[in-house]
Amino acid sequence: MMAQTNDWKDSRVTYDESTGSYRVDRDSSELLSTNVVLSIAAIEGVRPTQLPPLAQTIDPDALETVFGCSEDALLSFSYAGYRVTLDALGSIEVVPIGDTQPLQ
Image 1 (cartoon, rainbow, N blue to C red):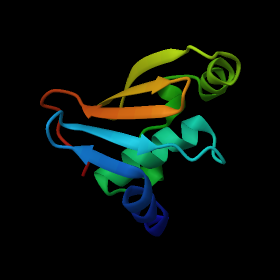
Image 2 (cartoon, rainbow, N blue to C red):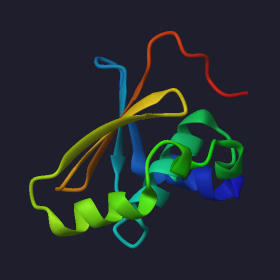
Image 3 (tube, rainbow, N blue to C red):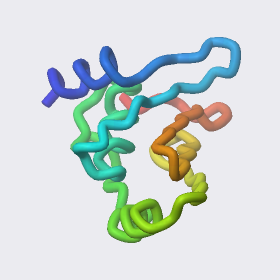
């Protein structure tokens, strides 16, 4: 699974040093919730199973429903020490929250 997150980071995640944020090129063949978890795992350099379950933060099914039926959805939430912002166009932005320490 580490190979998957490394490949994900290399091919889908870019870091913008000027804003301190990550941009994710969403994989539309995967669920949006999967994109979020794989992106955070790739940024942290950990396996997805080392992250807290996304369902403890947001309902993954509701996330898919909202973005599956709305052309102007915009949603931000905190997950695993990051502010995740999603929009209906498929953009994912991941920003570290304050002084949160990275996962070990």
